[in-house]
Image (cartoon, rainbow, N blue to C red; front, side):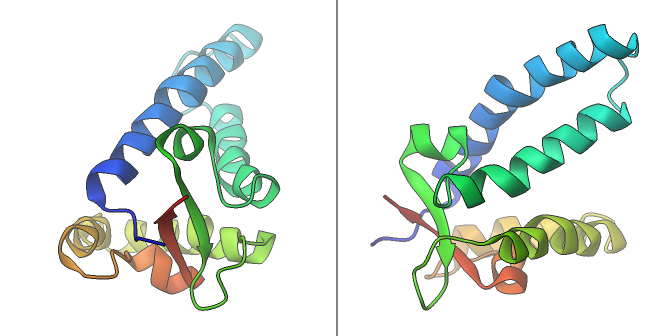
Length: 132
């Protein structure tokens, strides 16, 4: 399988944002009365979506499914498990926060220029994103 590059990964993320995150924020806002972007419940549910859906859907989120890409373990080509997704989302998120976003920028460049299209979060979790 071919590795998925920058643009299709960006497209999948944007679709996830439009299809899942925006409606989720609205629903949580209606339930809590807080339409602020920093609503903890919305962040929690969004995080759970990012961690659990790829485990349940063989490496796909809604956006990845639409774009025809998926996350898989590097080397074994198996779908990610819960531990893999925790590393990919939580630990990598901490690395990006600790580096004040510089790690994220480095990841964007890595996906754009590396032959294997792997970002920092892929190396942390031992994953890759490939075309289905």
